[in-house]
Image 1 (cartoon, rainbow, N blue to C red):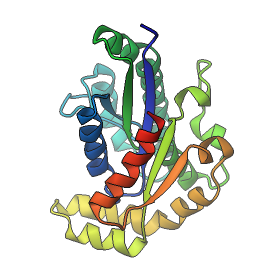
Image 2 (image 1 turned 90 degrees about the horizontal axis):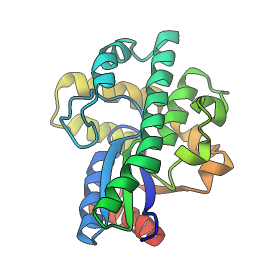
Image 3 (image 1 turned 180 degrees about the vertical axis):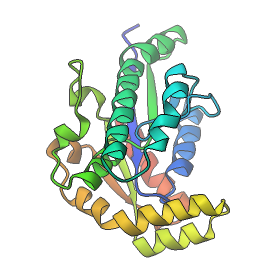
Length: 234
């Protein structure tokens, strides 16, 4: 059997666009079609506790999560912490895509698999440009250890996006604690225009892989639109 093929798909978008919902939908639909799927966090941070598939057990994250999280959202320390976490996630993705997952697929007699990322390269670029609006695509990732952008940029980047008013209304309706709603409202209110500028100025390597989906549509329609992109590649 030839070496298993691994495709990487990320779902990006501001808070309340339904990324986690659509990750679950895509996973269920692909598995129903006989496709192996792994879900991981693609940008941000994780706790490393194994509490979800996207956050497998990791001593490194258990040791570093609190420090990264404590840096907050503003200022040089926050910028450095976000970049530090991003580097770790990119290296994990590289190892998963090129070594760990192909080995797992081969052992299971599977010829292809999909890695679904909850947040990905557009989220990284967005966060970097919150701190420096002029930062380049390459500098936003700051890859080390000879990794190339082509190796860690997903094959398909699905961006869920709708109006600021819709996102804020969804936030007010969420059944979560006040602290989470306050956090979401802060990000949406303060950085919505920054996110739109990122979408309007995507570098070619990212633009050619990106599909923007109107997340203001009914959930089922959003899911079908996302699934069609992934299935076309498979």
